[in-house]
Length: 203
Image (cartoon, rainbow, N blue to C red; front, side, top):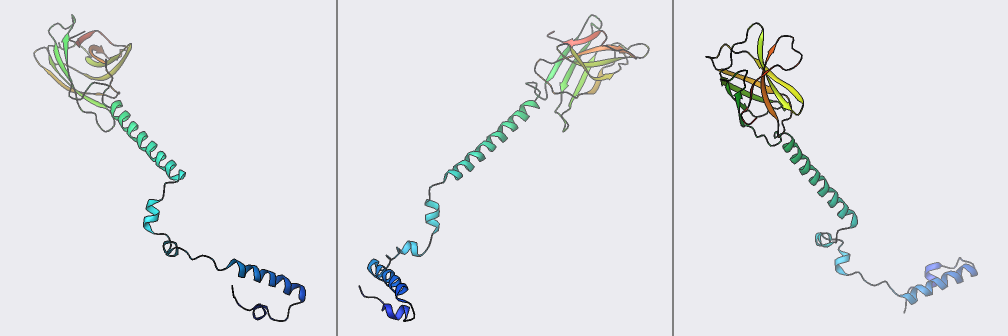
């Protein structure tokens, strides 16, 4: 294979030892020949098709799995929030029927659970009749009863058995399935619940 003249490339200014070393390299390059030509697609550089057809790397798969895990956590969190604020099976709009006890045998009432407000409180509307007017500084108290715990939800007074009651109360608690509501008579200074006058009809 012919190539450029060695003497023209290196000139005549080199000593004999350096000249012999460069001649050996020159002859090896001539024997190897020119490098093969690049395929046209490589010569043009990477294309969009090459990028799209490229198999995903391990890093890409890890990113996809992480994104899926985050989405799953978000869905689980949303479902848990809805379940935790739905009253534990006690739907908004539920109407509970209350009946009088021996302390108020002619009393009847309905307790309606209203939609929770933005702070998580559950307004309630108590309507009824038959509760006697209490003497002195007496009043009625509505309680949320959960096991041995009695949680107050609001108080009201009754003007007499001939007049009905219609009061709006509030339950600042997360409602649960199995919760009960009772109405008692109270007097100023009481440190515990008084006699029950209204209880669920299925009690």
